[in-house]
Image (cartoon, rainbow, N blue to C red; front, side):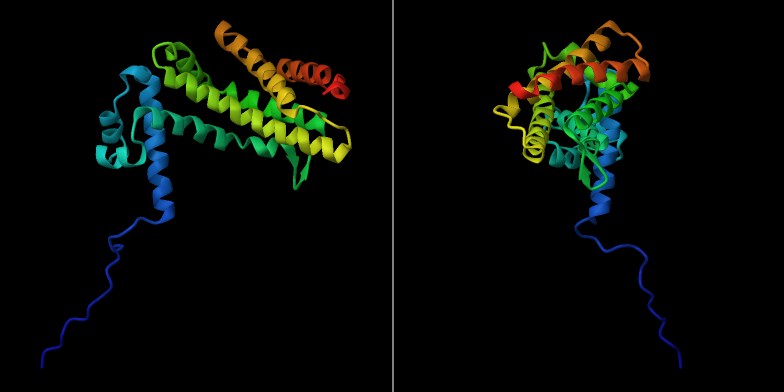
Length: 217
């Protein structure tokens, strides 16, 4: 009597929708490859087909996630923001920082992140090609607006917690974000090296000056 062979379960995963962790890995790969493509060829000459090939995928898969080069570039920008974890800079553990300390922490955290080599390269790309591709300016403005909304909410929380009224937190948040951005762009365009000590000293002076007028906010 011959025995029937015992069937074993295949180690391969059945076809179907990919697991969330697989989706995350695929998207991370695309963003990593796309960033290298943009930095090597510039925004105008970057090619979606080349990105798909380098990532080991297909153009169909790439376009299903990012319908255009603009969408892909924006995804890179906001992935970098997420990696910076700006919200964490406004808190100490579970508790929010005080107004002055929180603004200094946020400014130092975001400037330190923005002064990293890959961030500088992306920002230079945006500024150098935005006159040809307005969508880069739109992405930059959206990035700025997210910072303004985040700081405006923090100022509102601080006003309520400290019982110090703030008539226009959005205007104060804009002044704060544009102050930081102006300092960063100056050093970016002049290609000057800034030490941690110099950055922290400037942040202290700038935030102290801004908070001095808090009663007029």
